[in-house]
Length: 272
Ligand code: IPD
Ligand code: CA
Ligand code: CA
Image (cartoon, rainbow, N blue to C red; front, side, top):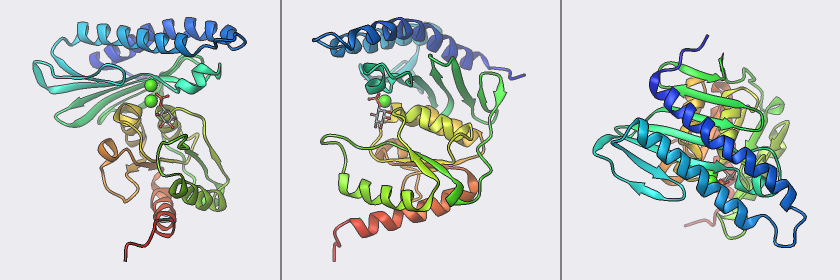
């Protein structure tokens, strides 16, 4: 049986409370699909309401902590050591289209290091959580990354850039390499859940460029505490600043990193 620390309980309870509102609103969104105006504005309000609930709950339980929230930005707290990093709705496009795959992501940073994380998927009632040194869990079950060692048997998650986001040519070069080497690529639409799925062994790996800290902070800890590896695409640890992220189980992290590196090298214009 998994024993949650008080701070993980704070995170999980805040997520459960915000999720109740999101689930109600998700039901409405399904109705709004067929209206001429569409659910766009309604979804932005749902997102803001979830953020408001999370802010209130987290601040009530830990009043001095700093905050980094997707919608309302960052604010320093009286406690300079701790900061919440929160995405109230990760997978907004799915939510907007009535696709039941989205999450609330909450990470706790202490002195620049992520020490606790929770990613909650309301439609399946899946609470992924981790605490540094204590392991990663899905509800009460301990998580381990997959044991797959062969790329040709691996299923890899990704995030595909869209509209003017990111460098499409470089992304397509990486996709081409991973497609050719593996058992399949998935784009489910929530970076936080992509990382949680690596932690749960559902995916063998995941990569994406240009994410934001609130997309990945909690998920990075989930993967590490489940025995996996997380780096940027050059093998460094700049994920929270560069936004580039590669997560995988132990045996597949290096081979995937090598594939991606080669793809980026051959796609990028030669600086010489
Ligand atoms: C997005 C999702 C998506 C990822 C994007 C993120 P949002 O977050 O995580 O999977 O590919 O990079 O921006 O906008 O739904 O909170
Ligand atoms: Ca997000
Ligand atoms: Ca979001």
